[in-house]
Image (cartoon, rainbow, N blue to C red; front, side):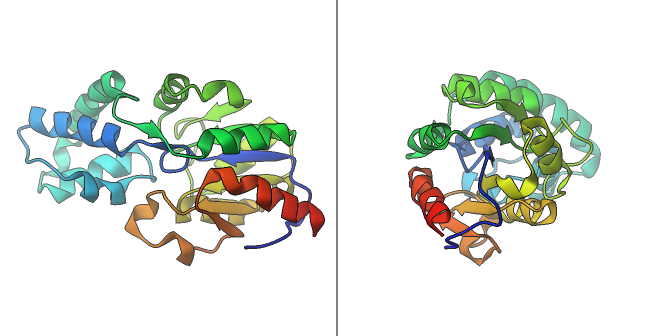
Length: 228
């Protein structure tokens, strides 16, 4: 765990799926409804956990490929998936333990907060509202907010601009290599939680400034950085 960042932290950008909320149940329920409507085989929740984090298009294309469906079904799959997810959003998900405490710590430290996710903005805002997390954030940006998605650095740079903070003073907190790669390219320090999805790969093997087993521990990292 790094004890210092390049600059004092003034703001934090937090990922959503796998970082704040365990949304695997929502994804699975919506995909199952989509697949059934298309007459396609079922898919296990454990399988789709490796598809999460790179945006809805990636999730749907990987799911269709896994069940052996032709790529030409994608437009129908998109339509059915979005209809299902709008009804399901938040019903089969839960806020990870320690998240509310971690957010409270970040706010108490005077940091401005943004949620930045590859999830469509409509669903991101709805989920944060449903879980009572929305009031903590100064801004929420989904995967459709900018021209490119994480791991491209553009969404982080645009979010830093919206927060009014320099990238070096804006901490990225996520659960995957996508978050870390975007942060590194944007010049943001980055912490990764160990309980998320990370495309099914060990998150501690990702280049980051540190790892958190619970977001509740973020205060200790900030305090250590201030002492360094």
